Length: 389
Image 1 (cartoon, one colour):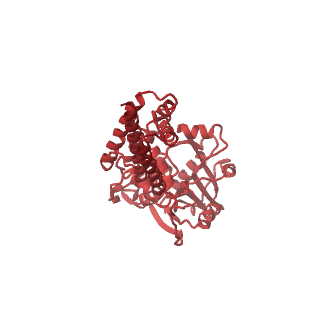
Image 2 (cartoon, rainbow, N blue to C red; image 1 turned 120 degrees about the vertical axis):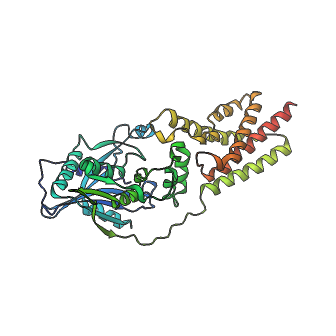
Image 3 (cartoon, one colour; image 1 turned 180 degrees about the vertical axis):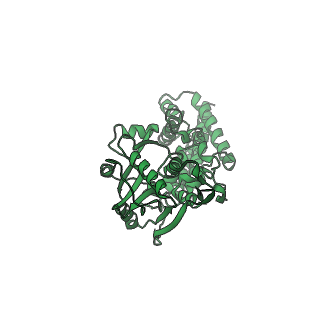
């Protein structure tokens, strides 16, 4: 899952007429390993390579390009209207960048005859034209990895089939995502917060192929029909480059540790509040404002955008959008705040008790946040009730 600078979009080789490939031409699936430079590099990348030494063609076709300069890019991104592009450029340049950043490069040469190779190339040439290169991106169902499989099926039709029987695990989509985010705890947290129950469905073998590694495995277990026989779709696998071992450390600045410190601070403040019989409103205003803002964001992602994976998000149980109303109510201190924080405390406590049983897998780093919400809600309720009595 790869991003390239806008300049690369201008290097596309949309065809200027029919190019006839030689008998030496090959179509390959290129799989590049994960990297830890950024969240979007953590999943790896997939692309096609068209190589015809007789014609001097060695191009990569990359479905993972997006353009920051596109009109309303950030607004469209927030709304779930993420437009990606197919771009074509020099394969050696593509390969060099991945090797430079120590990310493995594997090549699977497809067992295509000359007519199939030509048909594949013609489709890629057509798809790379400016009027055809853009598509509506989906994180899990239409991305730079799934496009590799989908293009193969579109070009080869019923003569190709993918056999998912080799998949022996029973992961959900969220669990598959987690496999790649071991060294990206904050990115993992952000994904776990923003995406809801659709992430927790059991992934089918086809669903696994939103990840480049499983595109490679999928093609390794795919077949193409030759006459009356089904033969492996991959004719040859070449390990162009294997990553060298690197040490990655997570450090202490991790969500769980940071949020535990927040809870300990809340515990100290709550102890002091009970001793004084007086609330530390400033802390609660800041804390519940943040939770309310997060909750409002999650609600908007659910009901006001096209992010299908953001629906039915149980994180709204600890990040109640109504906290924003409660914080504003601190100004006039209405009596209903007492009941509001009693309800909030009950919700947080029930959430904590049922955490392992929830249908949505919640990030464990959020446990201290839910504990803080319960603690401060109990403190608010108790001191307000005592003051009223």
